[in-house]
Amino acid sequence: MNAPDRFELFQLGEGQKKVTWVLDTRVPNTAIFTFEKEDHTLANLLNERLHQSPKVYFAAYIIPHPLESRFEMRVTTDGSIDPRTAIIQAAQEAVRDLEILKQNFTKEMEVKKMAMAGGNKN
Image (cartoon, rainbow, N blue to C red; front, side, top):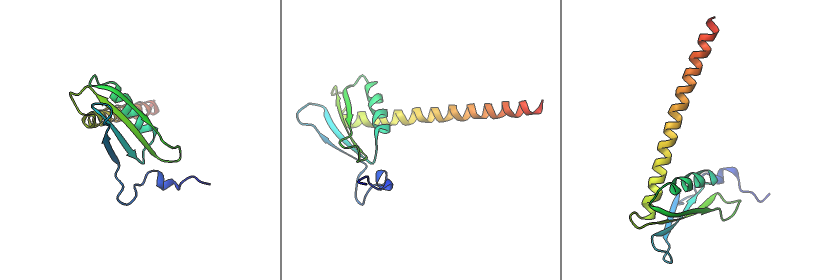
């Protein structure tokens, strides 16, 4: 098989950075970010969050090769913020949303446990 070992899909190599970025000189306020050892899960989450920002004109990602766990994201902003700041804000908002989801899930599981315990007493 030509598929990489599974640990290579998520473990960074020696000296490898998680995120790198370069400014796109052809389009103003545009940068291309490369995320190593990540896939559609994070890419789609960031992409959708970026689309919700009124300061972001364009956001899209590609996965250059299906056997490589890497994606490239292009972000164009209106100039009031730079693309790097837009990515950071999108990531922070996603983390905040996931924390709220975790809290709500935990609360609902506790309610279910109490309901199940109460049902067993009758």
